[in-house]
Each structure stands twice: as structure tokens, then as C-alpha cells.
Image (cartoon, rainbow, N blue to C red; front, top):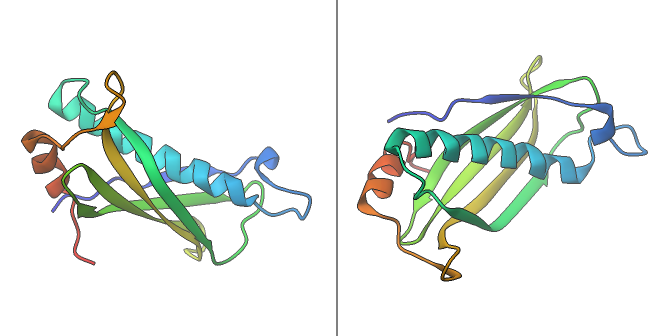
Length: 136
């Protein structure tokens, strides 16, 4: 099984709120960055532009606070592969302490933008995604 490389996020002041901690919406941006970097990597691996996806569902559980000027690590994994979609889970930790800050997940759907509808994952896509699938 392959692992998805972790990404590091430097928390900018503008990502915090009036309480001084990272705003809840920023965590969705951090997960998006991890997800899009993974999809870019996969697209390069297959050498084509057939990796057209949309985000169908996302959620985030906030477990602790993070603050400006901290560095966070986002760890991602594929937890489910369906006919037209797959699921990714993310853990966001303080890079220095390892403290778990937030957990989230997203459902990513293979999508035909021209026809405006979902489409089945190709056998090639499924084969690549299965290399990253972890048992939960």
C-alpha cells in the first residue's frame, strides 16, 4: 500500500478569527489543499487530464485550537472506493507537538463537466486509487 504524502500548512494571521484561533472555514481550505495536491499527483501519474472530480460532501470535526504562525500537518488517506466516487479522510495536527487539531473527510466524485453528470471511475483510476486504500 502506498501512502499519500503529508502536507504542511503555515497558519497565516488572516486565517484566524476574532478569538485568535484558526477560523473553522480555514480547515476546509487545508483539506482542499491536501486533496487537490493528491489529485494533481494522480493526474501526472496517469499522464492525462481524465481526472475530473468534484467534491460532493465534506465535514470537519474540531478537536483543539490552532493559532496563527503555527505549522500544521495534514495527513490524508483513501478510505472507500465506490463506482463513481471515493472518500478521503484527513487528520490535521500541530506539526511541532503532534496534537490532533481536527479530523475531516470528503467524498470526491468523478464528474463529466460537459455532460454535467457523474461518471464511473475508469479501471485505471480504480487501480491507482486502490494502491492508496486503507482499511478502516
